Every structure is written in structure tokens, then in C-alpha cells.
Image (tube, rainbow, N blue to C red; front, top):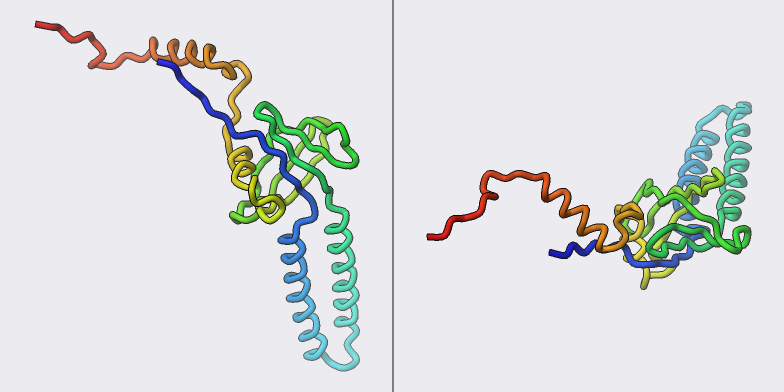
Length: 178
């Protein structure tokens, strides 16, 4: 019996400024702006606190827009063995730990990427970025990556054989023929 272990397909997927995140931030800001406007209209004429709220709202808009514009842009690569991040800063690519799926909303996935130098990126992968390879990316980030010792089928066959030899089953005795 030959055991065949399949791994996720190789994939190169673009990541960067997420439209989903941009829309989510804009929606939150609009809700906050509505509450601030309601607060302004409901407060007394000489009350200075709604002005402070408006200033905080403008600062929040600037911080959100700046953060969204400065989001890392690059490509996430899975070659069947290891993960890599390629971007303008990392032209030759940098090795990554396997990405951690933080949130999955089917058409977008929030990934936590850790490189070996200790940098951490939180990036959204979106289906709209490359629909033809979306399912390949999903398979790769959700796949259980096996250790390098089981990469070839001979090593996998030996491991399964050793495991099978240690398992005793009450019906595993040979049948007697009459």
C-alpha cells in the first residue's frame, strides 16, 4: 500500500491595500460622524465638548486614511515547501512563518504574517485581487503543513508501516482456511 500525501498547490497572491478594510473603516467613520453630529445638535449652545469630539473625529479620519495608504503592498508566495513575502522593500523575498488566519469572511481573509526577523504584518487577502487563484490561496493557508521528514512518499510509507505494526486489533489474526 502506498500512501500519497497531497499538499496545497503553489500560489503567488497579491496583497496590499484592502478595499474591504477601506470600506469598513469608512463605514465606522461615517457612523461615528453621525453620532458626533447628533451630539453636537443635542448639546447646549455654549458646550465646548462637541468641538473636542469633532477634532477627535478629524484626527481619527487622518489616522485611518494614512494607515490604509501605508499598508504594505506585495505578493505572498507558497511554493509547496515554504512561505515568502515579496515587495518593494523585500525584493528578493523574505521567509515567513506559515500565515495565521485571524478572520475569514469568505471573500476576504485577514492574515497575520510573521517573518523570521520578527516583523509582523496584518494584511487582508481579497478574492477580487486574483479570483482565479483565490481557492488555491485558501487551500494553502488552511493546509496542515507536514514536516520535511515526510516530504517524500518512501518516508511516508515507512512511517505508516511503523504505525501499523504497533497497532493491535482483535480481528487482525490470520483467518484459518478449511
